[in-house]
Image (tube, rainbow, N blue to C red):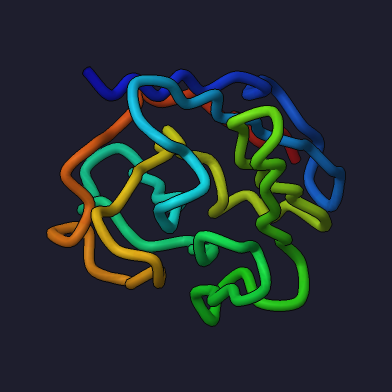
Length: 124
């Protein structure tokens, strides 16, 4: 049974930084790409970032490109999302997700496994 557990959310000041973590278990973590998505109240879940199985390839939503960094530590079965220069519109529940492929994709439909989410609140 695949389990994904996010942590690291909380209150961050606008233009501040935060690092989210997602611990995975239940299958060989290093075989699969991982992704981060977010969902603000009243909005659809949206793609944030994805990273390939090896960590050598990543992709970002245009809205976070240059400010957010996704990384992974396959020895620790953990994927991270470093968020710099956080904007007020970045307030959302952030979800970690796992694919069944080596390469990450932007569509949430490609991710069958999801964590419970971690709340990020941005203060002005």
